[in-house]
Length: 318
Image (cartoon, rainbow, N blue to C red):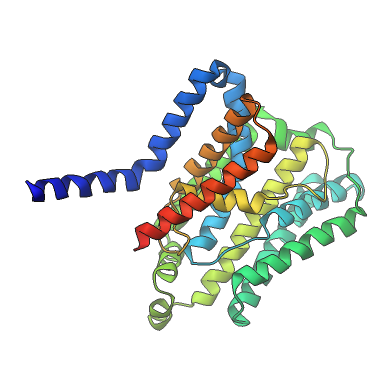
């Protein structure tokens, strides 16, 4: 009887360990819809998906970094810099839209690659380097705009963040496509295997002959590239390039990844984690807004969720 009980307990632990976030997501949706039926309205659901898509894209980017047991705190600042660069180059310099976007994305990716080189070759912890880059990128955005908001966007640019195709928000389409590409990279390429290996045991991976520095550098490049892309989407959505935009996004992105099931210690988790994590945060925020909960209390609540997720991750590791 004791053995059966033990087996049953282990089975339940595996179920909640693997599907706990999905169960919690469904329960939260049910509770909010009962309290506020408007939650299930088509317009509200589309709004939630549009908002969750931005955090979801950045969360996918930071997932590449966290899986390799690193961290990136510069996401929000890089997003803001990319947004103002794209808007400024398009409206002020009158560059072709594709070229303006390409330059902004190139700068974003370059920032990530530079951080990766400093971290790997300088043997500096990613927390310190990305924290410094957070300040640098935010400062560059302020310098470029002189602290002002850049406007004057036309319908073509605004379509990137506010448009839809057959009723599906364009940011959601971007989110789905990027999630599929990330899934293929992490599960169907040697690079994806190397990321998991590095997160699992960095030294053993190095001794096996894998260039772990290159893998980590590329991961930071991908993370910054996707952060820059979301910065462009955000600028298009709010119809302006704002140097103070995307503040705190790094915490939301990391929270989405960890809450979804990516291990903060690296090497564990799949691409479904940042997706469900971003949707979970989007639903929570939307529900709190519908309940007219102050944004200040929302910050407290999200912070508590992060702590709980890290505690659960620590328990799993043990």
